[in-house]
Image (cartoon, rainbow, N blue to C red; front, side, top):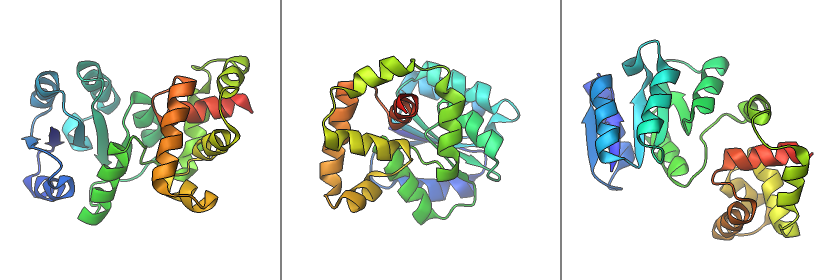
Length: 207
């Protein structure tokens, strides 16, 4: 189940195309209806127009994820602003892009987020990790978790910590993207984390 949320019908048409035939899509045009929708449907992914949240965007995101913790939110904003993006990722969104992104780009963003990755500008990765680092475990805890990884898994974890996508890792290591996905799954299982951001935090605390 997918949800597109905007008060602007012309956007919803393009977003529906970006989602394609991955599953049924529900269109929402009011913030209060969106909260009810997530509580009831527990969708896999939401494309959310920042204008629907008015001035309380972070609060809205936090509330939505309390209602449906497994939902992945892609926020579409008027313009890319570093402070706003960092605040949104800290609140739990999985991707941020501008409202006028073309359908091809949005299709790619949806695919990346559904694969468990973040759609984030590389320049923001280190800043996001730094801003969240104080909430995570100490260095000894991070080192202990990495002790169970193979050398190849450690190498891949380091690249993820630098913000690399699976495709970039595959190209860098001359292996297939499917092989990278297998290693990432093993890394998550062994370290006890469930997404790339928390893995990046572990990497940052280890060094």
